[in-house]
Amino acid sequence: MAVAPTVPYGLPLFDDTSAITPWQAPFNAISNGLNTALGLVVPVVADLTALAALAGMPNGADAFVTEGGASFSYNSAVTKWVQQTPATFATTAARDTAYAKASAAYRVLDASALVTADGGLYVCSGGGANWSRVWAPGQGPYAMAAGLSTNIPTGTAGVSIPLPAGRFTVSPIVTLGPSFVSGSGAAGGGAYLPYDATPNSSHFMLAAIGVSLVTVGWTAIQMTPTSAAG
Image 1 (cartoon, rainbow, N blue to C red):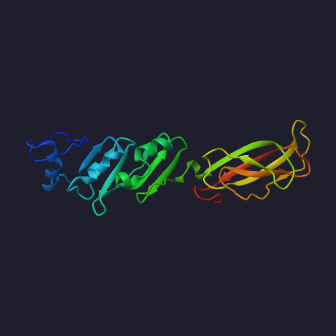
Image 2: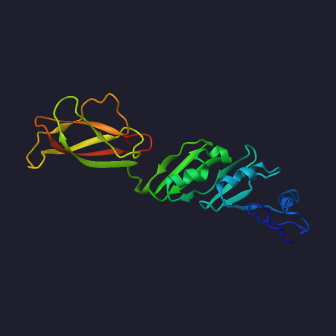
Image 3: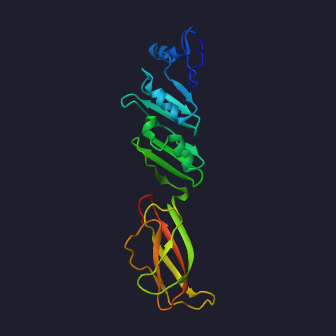
């Protein structure tokens, strides 16, 4: 069995004749039934669009994408690729660039990616545009933050304490530690979380009890990608 010329997208295909043009290779191999495991190798996720558009692409054809190092299998019923192994990217930004955020654009039905920056596993199902983190190292909280906020006043209004930008996706659960008078270490009388008309993932409200201008320790936690509790 002769090896056909390497075709565009770097597809090493096998056929019973070497007298074929590169673009004929995929079709001859498929129609002759000689390639039972059509192994395609493409450099970037975006190339999956062109592969899916090839007439006669067989159901179950395998493709390996060197960008991210993931394997895909073709589903001819829906003319889309189903990701078999997670891709790996350094950051979520690199992942989004590779998949152009909307995986439907590249005909990827179910995408998955490991992001080394946070160690999380993300999935994007149904060819949509939104990634969800479904696993993190140790299955710990999805996100956390902690801080010491100074000069907290008394009163029912309180002050807005900012949370790290982009860390939380919902309003987290906030717990407070002991409060003390800044600079002296004396007991500050306590603190509480006053009513917040617009709770969100970017801030929480904080007020002192009894003694004004105290320092308060706090911890914010979000347990899952969609819920503070969990």
